[in-house]
Length: 157
Image (cartoon, rainbow, N blue to C red; front, side):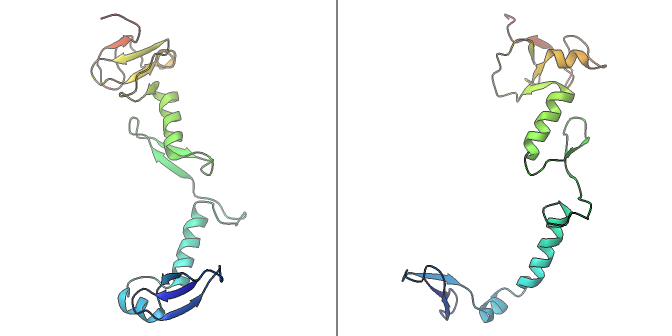
């Protein structure tokens, strides 16, 4: 495959697969310096990338301490640490924290038909009642998020 500069058309050589006669584009050093003077050269970019990867534990440096990846809970404002960040997304870790610490089962838009759940009439959040009952500040029938009224999902209106 032939490589040409997308700005000036200069031939930049070939790359695999060599039998492919199509043309692909790159940028030559002169056009890169002229059109993108603020961009970091490849070596400086690579060094900055390695520093960021090391900071979050993705580099192969077992001797260095990793900076923990965290996400902030919008309810209690606590920093939730994600120790297994390679396996769990921030969203999943935050969802687990909210379910365990605040008793939310789902978002207000999702319909939940799980027994022992209650929905707030004001903010429309869905709560797991057994988890709510374990909290010290739990008041039966009152939403811990907004102070509205909690109703059982199965209760008739």
